[in-house]
Image (cartoon, rainbow, N blue to C red; front, top):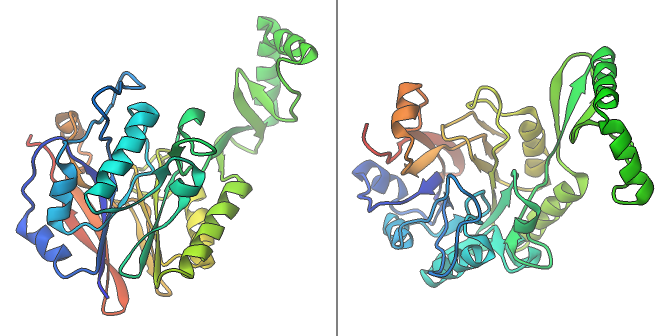
Length: 332
């Protein structure tokens, strides 16, 4: 069995696959990657004003020519053109012969595994994702709804509370709760930013237990349907060092791999990150790019951010390994 997991494919222009990359995917039983973009219908419109990625209309054909079999759709560009764009992307890629996961008409379809040759792909988006783009009874992506609080020492918490009183924010919030516009919560906040006590200032990210439990159940269900289970997770809550796994992600990886996933392959940071292989399991905090048709190539190069070097996870001869992939990025 040979499985190849590539990073994110952001395709705006025609591509010619390098021989080295073709050799990497040649003979694979399954090739997976994150489809970073949208294939909207003609009458759809963007839902935001910047970083909107309508993929090349033939992007699916190009990926099929590389041997890609399954695509992860749960990411922050699946909904660039609203529900219409999300559903059009899924249906277009399905008609092109791909197994797709991570976005659909409802949570059941968005969280279902895409299975090919005994390999199950689950796709999850860890956001940030607007509520309307999260799959539930209606269309959206399969979301892991991370929460963040700012941990602060007691004196700083008191100082911020004083600011809300001086500005009138505390009084206005109390009035809204009294009327019933807002509910009373035990969480302290400062202008909408959740706060809690901590020995030193720090961000505290948490995965909601109900979302984690649901993804664990999806993994266990997929294990009954396929020999291998791969979880593709896309996120934009990065560490200060983009190449390092944030604490919340390392903890989540341990949970999902123990639950039965064979690999957790992440995308989001536009560079290759840490890879950990142990006990027959693989965790990549970021596979970076395989195609990255960004308009910011010159800025990345000027800042020496290595977007031109991605990573791939390979399962072959009964073991996982990682290899460097030279990403297709616009010339300097």
